[in-house]
Amino acid sequence: MVKKGRKEKNLPRWFAIKLCQDLTELNLQALAAVFNVEHYSAISKAVGRLNTLMVEDKKVKLQLEKLRDCLMSEVKI
Image 1 (cartoon, helix red, strand yellow):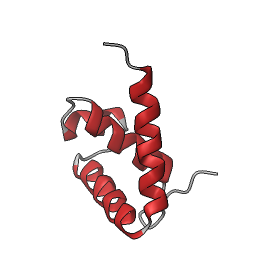
Image 2 (tube, rainbow, N blue to C red):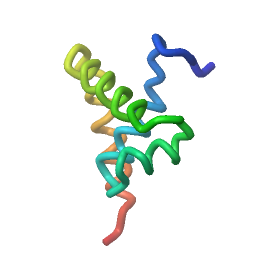
Image 3 (cartoon, rainbow, N blue to C red):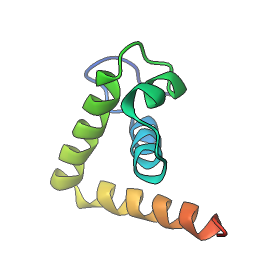
Image 4 (tube, rainbow, N blue to C red):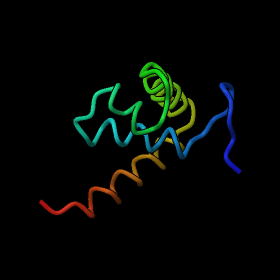
């Protein structure tokens, strides 16, 4: 079940937002449209919360790194 609300940690969504921000050239407004949020500041806040959580919990940071590695291994340039 996906948790919703301002106080909930929605790690899959935060990971998706962070990876899209890191791996694309989309700005915050474009990412807000992609993730169907009303204001681009929600994107910035989600990334900020994830960054804070990664400092507190190294397992979360490792999960994000593994996801990034998997995505990048699929990219052929």
